Image (cartoon, rainbow, N blue to C red; front, side, top):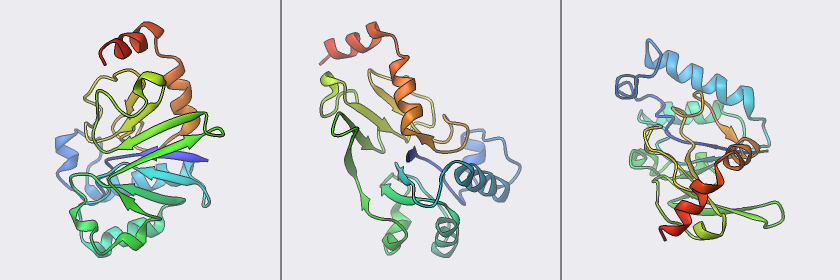
Length: 179
């Protein structure tokens, strides 16, 4: 399976207050996110993490990454400066990536930051992002895949496709007319 997530902020004590996350401590937060991740993701699954993985020591980040199921591909976020020298925890580390699904039927543009237009946005290409912690409205076929938006865990490709297909057609057409 293919999964998407963002803004886990493992080890980042202040994220509890900034985003009003419902945990009493960063330790409780981290354990809940690890459990939610592993309840959904299996060992061989693909996980695209769209940035802001951890804000803690490299040892702690390595320990957490080692406990997470799946093959993790990291798209860098603004808080991922500490990842330098730890790239081996991930399959690869990039700023931007495009995924092709269903025999190249659907393209998905991945980036930490939301965009109003993206490669193929007028042709039905999806855009998944993080950074906004669920505070931005969707635009066309775009949505935030951060943990604040998706019950503190990864969201599957199938869930994203179902969500996008439920969007009102006039909202998609409206987004296309603003190009």
